[in-house]
Image (cartoon, rainbow, N blue to C red; front, side):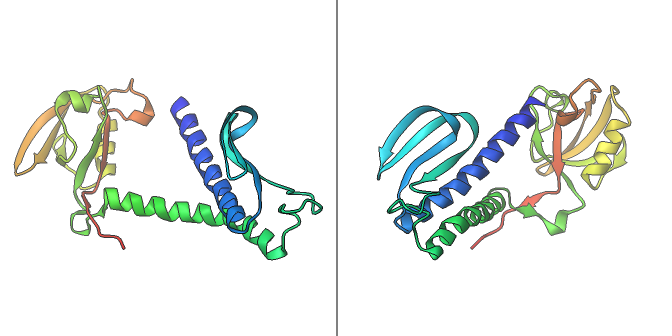
Length: 216
């Protein structure tokens, strides 16, 4: 549970920081002065440095960040946001959501560039994509890249079939036949009902084999 909470905080912080960075860059582009760019939410923990008339600060609440343009709500402040032309104010406002969209595109491109995509010619195969440390699968000798051929004597063609067999035989040794490179072998794994649900009874993460793709 703590891991999920931490992942949520990190993901939310990244989205908010990207959003605020969009506002900040737009302010710079349109010559709107920015008084502060904060990582995290107040109260302030420290001022990291000052550059271009902007204080870059670190704050105590780790939920994203904020940008404080000069004269954000006061049109009487010269060089501030509220006194800028309407198109400038619109540009600064829109820059935040646009940065979030750009972040999504970059993350998708990076994901496909690193992981590839499921190989259409091998969708009926099950490949081990991760083996958790100190898990039954690791102790049995399974490795990333192994292709599962059968579990407990039953041929398997997708991850759901493997999980169904595993969870029907908790705390019982099951035979797993697999292919590694050009050779096949068989070993025994005992899925444990005592393991946390998010780690799986055997500690395997599976899916169809991936293939590298070229992205523009």
